[in-house]
Image (cartoon, rainbow, N blue to C red; front, side):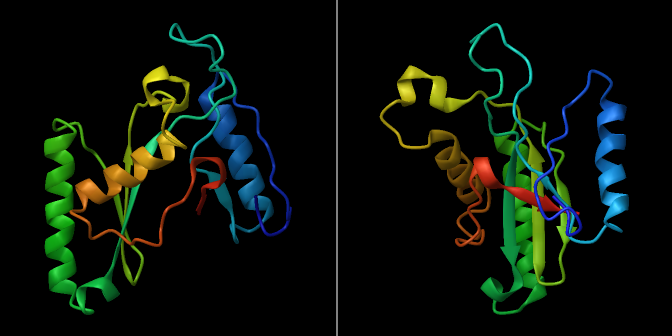
Length: 164
């Protein structure tokens, strides 16, 4: 979605990933890179060996953690200390497979950690939980940040857009 299209544009992913990326950037260029957003959790486009019904369903593909300066009494040193703790927790809990992207936003840090995940909604053991994938992402965010992540930032899988 961009400010010039004003509606969501669905781009079919191709086998050649670069072609898909080129299509996305063509829309971004059209909008002069203003207010461009991309779906954080794209739909699965392939069937898997686990479940032939997985096609066009969405699984969590990354954990987002928002650490805000205001939550640390506007003390950047405290914020930076928590960032280091969070990154260490990610490394430990993700068995050193943690390679997050960390962005300084001017008011804090956004941390994006790619993950491989199944659609928890399709697993019988999770049938008693409402929206288990969303709940897992919130749990992971809070566990890894030791509860310091922004409590108001809980984007759901179905409508999570990331700005360019």
